[in-house]
Length: 443
Image 1 (cartoon, rainbow, N blue to C red):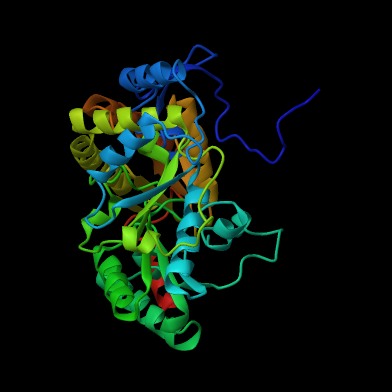
Image 2 (tube, helix red, strand yellow):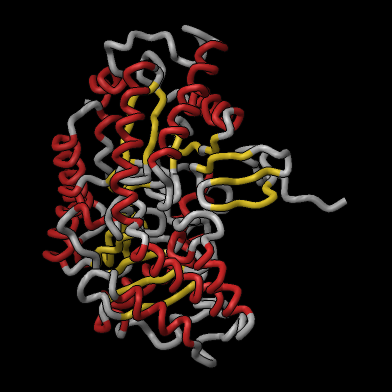
């Protein structure tokens, strides 16, 4: 009997019958509030009627029109709509299928545009699983171990992870920028550096918003040295953070922007955007692909962008994100195993730490499983697996956020009851935050 690869581990036991909005209806007859959204993909919720109608209509016209052979109207319309949201100056777009593929296209373009070999990434970043994208990923060794050699020319610099260091944000930013300057002095000279590649909020790396001052510091150095600033908006983009693009919480603007996930509400499509001048520096034949810019995915993308605008979903993400964050802070005060709560918009993370400040993956995993028992779907992330991430759809309502918080609280209570004061760190002194205990060692 044929089965799925044993390497694929399910985060929940749920088998879906159907889904709508923020809800997944299982074959077990249970109704699950979905705070995973396919890892941030179903931005307009499951099966939004307008997206479904657009895809259904396009399927009856043409499904696959290879876009370097014949052009199709949905891709032209998507390009126009996307252009209304792109940062000024990014007026040229290339389409692919996945985030990994788009990241690789962005790196290839940066190297060609600058004539330089090296890429600087930042600790905790996730950029994909294909060989080049995995070479750029530092969110955990599981993404890049076991198939060396990886792509050459990648250098990693520090990320301003304030909680891990036990510092405030300003101190963490100053440290990370000093480390970047030191890297440019010691490992990759500016005139050998093609690009800085960073997420505006780390995804698999732990749901850490990138401080605006850090992005602005990268922009300053990129401009000074002729380095391309690539911002990976695969997970943070399309309204997820309460701005259309996650980097818009800062004054920094990218030279190359990467997008995927939420742009088509679940249909596979990705893109990179750059100025025409930059895009024109790519070598002939360096961009293409059989399925890139698929007609049905493009039609779903057009409908998604219309829904995001018509239903004010960026604004809703901001408001519901504030509600969710406030609720998580209240839970942090009650459960001392929660070392940190952070996030922006509908991209929120809960980091669990043991009494000695070390990452507590056991508690995070137990809580994630317990939320499923409470009919709330969540995921874990972070290099140590000790962060529970919450990713509601942009259409989520205030009532659904309230319900999700109550179910999360019930899950936390159930885990606390199984091993009070031992194992999962629900018993340590709430007056001393784990991050403060890490600080002495970090310094």
